[in-house]
Length: 328
Image 1: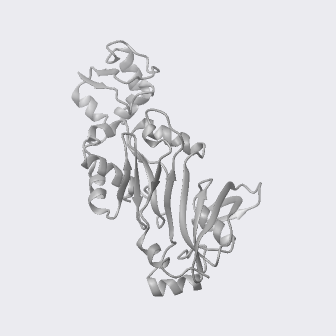
Image 2: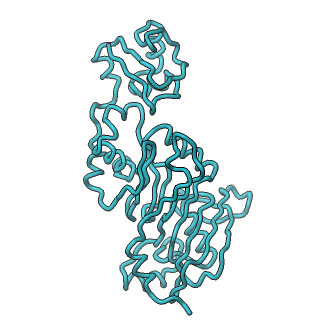
C-alpha cells in the first residue's frame, strides 16, 4: 500500500484529475474501476472521483509497486532541468516568496520551449528550485512550476514564475484583469516628444512569425500600448511603455507604425539605421527590456506582494547608449 498526502499544490482539484497526474500512463477507466473496488481510497473511505481535494487529505493506493510505477512517467526524469540550470548563464532571481519568483532573463533565451529539444527559462526555473531544495523530484508528478508570462527570445527582463498552484492561479487572475503593471524600456529611432496611447488590432502570421496591424473586424486581437519619452539623445529616444494588453511583438509593431522603430529590430525596424549601430556596438536584436512590475493591493496569503514594485537591473548596452548628452 502507498499513501500520498495532499499538499498546497494539489488541493482544490478533483480526485480523478489528481490521479491522472499521479499515474499519467494509466487509462482513465482504470481509476474508476480501482475506486469502485476500494483499491484507491480517500481518507480511508470509498470515493467516486469527483470529490474536491483539501489540504491534508490522504489518498491510499492498495496496488502493487510494479503497477504504480508502470503507470508513472519515467522515474527521475529531471535531467533536462538540472542541465538547464547548469548550462544557461546570466539568469538571476530578483524576487522570491512561497508562491512565485521573478527572474531577470537575458536576451537570447526562450521563455518556454518552442520545440521538444529546447532548453528554456521554464526548465532553468525548475532546475533552480530542485537545486535549492524548494522543490523535490516527486512533487513534479502532480504539479510542475511554470513561467506565467513570456518575453520574446531577444527581449530581456522580468518574467514571473509560479512555484505553487495557488501562485499560478493568483497570477493568472491578475493578468486576466490586467492588474499587474508591466513596464518596458527601449531605445527607438527619432525624438518622441510626448506621451501617447496606441490602439489597434494585431494579426499574426504563424508561418513567418510576424505580426501586422489590421482594422477592427479583420480577425485581429485588440492591443493597447501607452508610451512616453524618458531621455532624448542624438538620433534616438529612451522610451518607457506600459503594456496594457500583452500580445507577441506588440510594442515592436506599435512603435514601428508610430514612426519610432526599436533600435536593433530587424524584423519591424529600419535596417540602414540598425546597421550603423550593429557595426559600432555589435547590436543584432531589439533593445527592449521588461524593466518593472507593479502589483496591486493583495490579501493573504499573498500580502508580501501587496503594492510591490519589482525592477530589473539596467542592461549594460542601455547604459552605454544613454551616456551621451541629452538633446538641448
